[in-house]
Amino acid sequence: MQNIIPYFILIPLIGFLISLVLPKKNESYISVWAFSLVGLQLALATGFIVLWILGGAETLQIKEVILYQNPEYVFQIDFLFDRVTAVYLLVGSILTFLVTLYSRYYLHREAGYKRFFNTTLFFFLGYCLIILSGNLETLFIGWEILGISSFLLISFYRERYLPVKNAVKVFSIYRVADVGIILAMWASHHLWHQNITFYQLNNAELVHEHLNAHSMIGVFISSMFLISAMAKSAQMPFSSWLPRAMEGPTPSSAIFYGSLSVHIGVFLLIRTFPFWEYQSSVRIAIAAVGLVTALIGTGIARVQSSVKSQIAYASLAQIGLIFIEIALGFENLALFHFAGNAFLRTYQLLVSPSVVSYLIREQFYDFEPRRKTIEDSFPTKLQNTLYVLCLKEWNLDSMMYQYLWNPLKKIGSKFNFFNGLRLILSFVLTYGLAIYLYINKENLPSEVTAFLPEIFAGIALILVLKAFTQRRSVRMSWWLIVFNHFWVAMALTINGNYYLKETGIYLVGILIAGIIGAITLQRLFKQEGKITLNRFQGLVENHPKIAFAFFLCSLGITGFPITPTFIGEDLIFTHIREDQLVLASLISLSFILDGLSAIRIYARVFLGPNYRTHSTFSNRYF
Image (cartoon, rainbow, N blue to C red; front, side):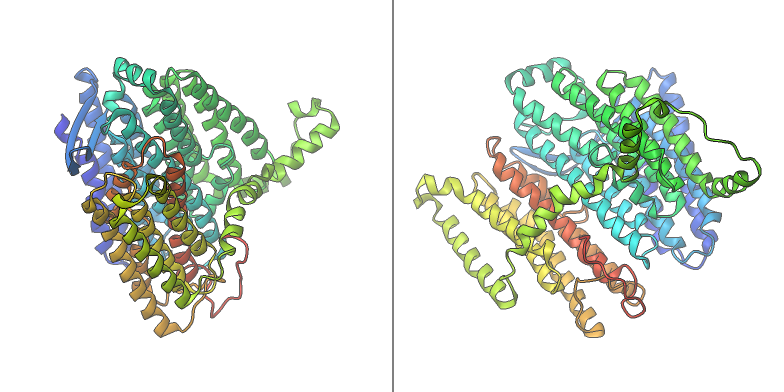
């Protein structure tokens, strides 16, 4: 039966690749191909799970492909199938099949009809990779695919301002979740001295032995899992992104943010439960996050004027309860709760357009006075305070900007002296000095070499902060991101026992994506003239081929799994020592900002209202 497991990845992969070449104007070919492939996946999953249960429902593990290996490190694709995978695979296949069938008619004659089905199949590929993953590296591939497909579906109506702005917002939170996984992988390498698999985590003696000797590393890894799960499942304080994600079409809202994608954080906690099962502090933290989210999310949902936002907050409140169930050890109840919540929210979102019209009719012909609720027993001041707080969504959006993004913007704006020739000259001189220090590292005092990695990582962070806040020159922002990666590579190269081959693996994808991206921008400038990042330009319809090429370059420069840089990012983190938390934090923050900066450039240049026909400015958000 193990030989069948890779087909759950191959089917959506083949379906996605073929959907890219289907004729754009033939809607029937596109939709029939999409729901036929998902239907095949559903039939195969149903049959496989039935045979698996009849055979004893044993946990299946398969080590598929080794992508890179050295004496101290192995990057391999590993698959695992157990009851958690079975539930997520069956629920995901059923809901994806229903939504693709529904979308065939809902999106009829929509300009982005083919694009929607392409992205849905791409999402389904990432979803299957996550739930079938047997280690963190495999999970992270699907994790990245899920993030970028979310960005594409939220910005589906790419000629509008709000969908594009909210897509960048959601992607910014997803980058936090991405780096949480990267840091968890980094610390896991030091804890286990190998690429640990989820199957090995079920060995209680092995886990107990390692955590006894390294309890603080264990708490750190568990905390990173929790932060990633919180960001991906919209738990407090990351909850504000979920209703913003409803800017996409109703079917994508149903499958992504009502059912499947928003429950991936739950999957991560269930999958890693054997690791943090005996860490009381972590269990208390998970339960506390779930409780706060359930209470605040329920209050916000009750005052929403938009039906989709109401469903979104109701869904994240239920996920908060699932977090509590996982923390208490009720794993089977959490799986059952996930399935019920996923089906309910998908149904609610798919019928929401009809429900709105029914409710409008009923308020005229079947009026009912408001029923008394528990809030009526509260003092009047408390009622009013809670109402206003919930109406303002507890200022969650403002808090994220005030305490996270705005401070980074202010720091980046302090480096406005980096411009044009001055920037290139300073990079060449300082990087040349860094290479000289690396070559003569053995002759330098140990006190100096001890601080060089943090200094170089700090320079990398300064460059990407400048790219993040750059609003005038598109090319400067692009090259700042490229230079940032070179400084990260230098910081890790000088840090210790580091193979130059691994530096090449990390930088080759960056260099290729950076050069091709610069060429596409130059070609665009020749046709459009000077373009800035002060506003959304909306050039995707005018230059679709250039936009697609630049989008691929943006993915490559962020370490998306289409270049060797994806493996290189994991490789370089293995050479950060466990006591170098400052270095790991600096590089992690650089990774958050470089991905966000690259996608911001793409969104500003190619998405949003066309600058020739609209005058909508964006001065506040990213």
